[in-house]
Length: 602
Image (cartoon, rainbow, N blue to C red; front, side):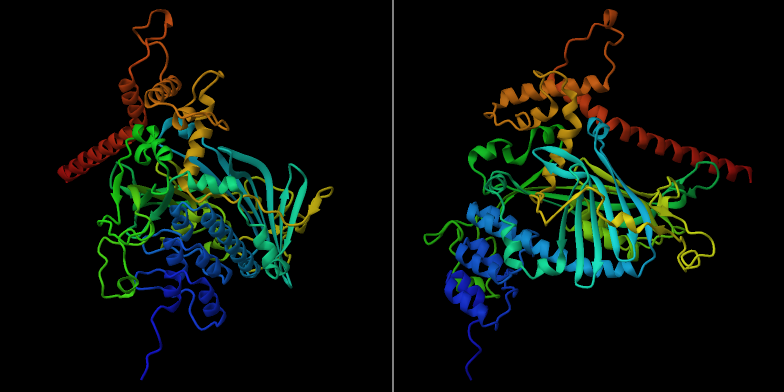
């Protein structure tokens, strides 16, 4: 009896780049477009790795999933960037954004329906960005997300809009979601320009061609990706453990409690939280790579961030090799699950460095808080996480099996020197009254409801303000994925103010060898060191009092050497941590002495 035909038929057509036959096979609807081959790749992942643009185009037209990650944790878009092909990157990026938009739009009605069944509320989420690096922590931005929920209507206000042209973008913006019979209405309200962009989900989802056309990225965006390292940052929470924080030295130590936004909260530490950052550079030109040898900037060297470098596909190149099949793997070898490829692989040989840092996250949990994390807060975090990297990390952390209680405050790592502290406050305007929110009068239907914290929200907050111009949907340039870029933006915003005169070199210029918005020729390594020296001098002047005991009449001392500056800067950065550890040791010693005395007396 004849078999069903060759295994992995779509993959084999992709391997040979027989895109017309691939189109016909997909039109027959007899094959699973998301089937994985023995190496864990879908047809789209295989087509991208092999650089077969025509096959990629066919698969994307048939809605192959761009959001899937490989078993090594790389997204399809990142693999497309590694090919160095601008057309490939443009195509994958366009469909990635299109699929993200349709998934977001399709999920909003379900989100609003879930919220409709929960009690109405108003709450504020304060985001504070902190760092162990003194200057970064001094001027990191903060933002307050203000959230109104009434029935199946939701409004989220923010002032920190994102990152563009190497600066934090500020503005007063509201995002309003209103449930309707046909789906939902989404409004983005720009209060600074008094403009409202509206989108009706039912109509948008029925016009895929028009939506896809709006997703085409600019040439500058594509070029920026191809000249920047591929950076992947994620929280590894597989080994996270929660433990109660202790306090007190007299008598037995007690479990720590703190009041947050008027609620008693237990304080927990989440240990073994690992932040994994991987950087790939195989697609970069020698000039791009030379800007930061091995992906390591002067600032990273200053912070002492060790990286482990690794290279894959290191087998000897054979005669029939090609740029995307450097070890000349045959299709029979590739599709044979019993054939070991060992260090051989398809795709451009990977050049990667990685670093793993272990953090301790902290959370404050209140068992008395009336908000429901699952019914009221998680739907909002899920919505914001689709297009916001910070909310995505918060969602990943909250999805862990947390101890009981509502997380009134959470502190988690975002990048290797940047933390986010999120605090829930002003529930239903109880701390700072708002005209749009009030507690209903006793005896009213809302007051008599089963809600532990009855709250009434003015329906006017979900309407377009008077005098605003209402326009159709508008799509902004999507945020870049690489969290490392957001870190660099944060550092730049935090430290630019260190330079007070036009001719001074700021810390940001020392990190990037350029002024924001300028395209200057690359400086030499010697000039780079001079810039970093001058930048560190400015940093230290902000942290060290001028004129020591040996300085007559307050005359500034001679500038320290570069090595001395590095030593002082690192000393400043670690002093607070050392002091904390010293206090902890002293507290433990005092406790042991008191305990010993109490045992002796008895």
